[in-house]
Length: 274
Image (cartoon, rainbow, N blue to C red; front, top):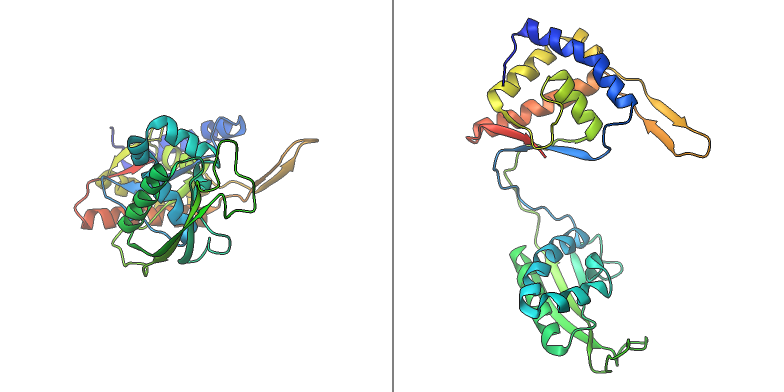
């Protein structure tokens, strides 16, 4: 990748302003978000509450249980309630760190249901979550009628009383998440990286030079300011954009530097956009 001198880089980036704004006005930018991450650093999984936890447990549980009870049986199992509604906190426990985690089991037989519950407990343990007790409910215990083919003694749900440990102190880098359009403005525009930024890897020393150059000129950053927008076409959706000023860009560029410095101090050489 070519590295520009300060003067050459500023001239090149300035030429991109009108091009980029035309692209945004034509609507070719996606609305997804982009994260700036450190090389191959293994980020610590953080769970604020049981709802967070249940999603990650299911992501580990399902591929495993397909191998244990068979793909067809596993697909039928999750299809009965929906992927993220199969292992889910009980009502009132969603945003707590202890409570009841429900594992819905229909239409599994007792053997497969036990395999699912055992695996769920295992993956909860991987996240340092204690299972204090478990109880099973059958269709005979439920007020609802069992679905076709189910017997009254078939398992319906397992209720696991769980407790998450205290949040651990972790040594992860600072975080930066940007809307796709903002990421393009900053990385493809201000920092003059390629237009296709998804998966872009950037050597830290070069990224820092580009960021420091941009931060050295408020006049240059002012060229990228965008006014707020609140528009609605007749019968269409309302579009709201808060606008970006120099301080916004300075705060994001400062955050990029913090991430880069953390990475350097921990022996990493690249940052990536994902």
